[in-house]
Image (tube, rainbow, N blue to C red; front, side, top):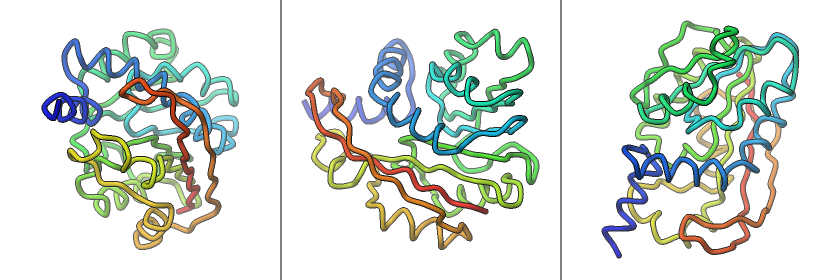
Length: 216
């Protein structure tokens, strides 16, 4: 059982192989409410250039593209499998030059300074190996007054899940806000929501999550 939980935790952080595809599909289904909330909170405008960190299979890209005209989306993944899955399922956006998917190693973001109007990330915070370094990179690639939406499940919920003992760093809202402020972000708003979802161990649970909106 312990080994199964360890493997699940590893796959949630960096999906690989056939199991990774299954886990990614599950993540997309269980996280879609959080993902849509993060996207909507950005209030995307016409011509915005958007970066998502940790897009998974990116089944939500059609939803994002409906938010405004002429959006340009960039996806950044630590998992080569997820990059491949996202490319496979979003060929139409790639072909019309409105989406690109890149790999990175979890710290250095491979884009120029002041490249993005909006950045968002959902359920990746737990896996950041060096949060200060990554937030410094996010700050660097955001345009002046650009917005970051950081969406994550509450620590009090996450610590009840058996697999979070393996490689997860859990955050309360206060912890996350302090981390952002320490790294030169101005907190604009913090939104709390509770939803009913099936957990990764297939039980129906109430999940409280936060979206923190922060400005460069």
